[in-house]
Length: 119
Image 1 (cartoon, rainbow, N blue to C red):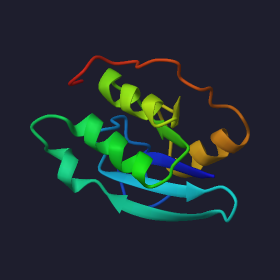
Image 2 (image 1 turned 180 degrees about the horizontal axis):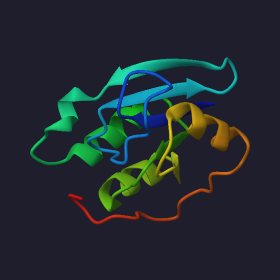
Image 3 (image 1 turned 180 degrees about the vertical axis):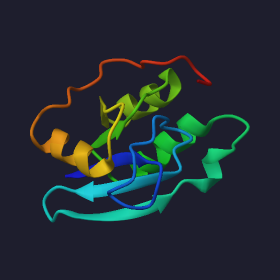
């Protein structure tokens, strides 16, 4: 299963980015192979608008079944739900710590956005 973690940096020791749509990087982790790839989200970091929707579309097209981020806005959440991508929130810590929390079942699925649009 592919899990997308928002990340402030390009490696597993980087902090989970609190933003989804404007996260600096996405780290796509495969829990079966325990391998990961880094996706630069530069095109959405300074986007004038629509960053959450575009990022959600990108993640869904990459075949991710889950997204783990610090926070999630309503428009991105809507696109992810439509694509049947589940969301969990991990508001602090490193990506490596979030992977451990996800694997151990410590992160619960978010039922709705936890911040307003354009947060």
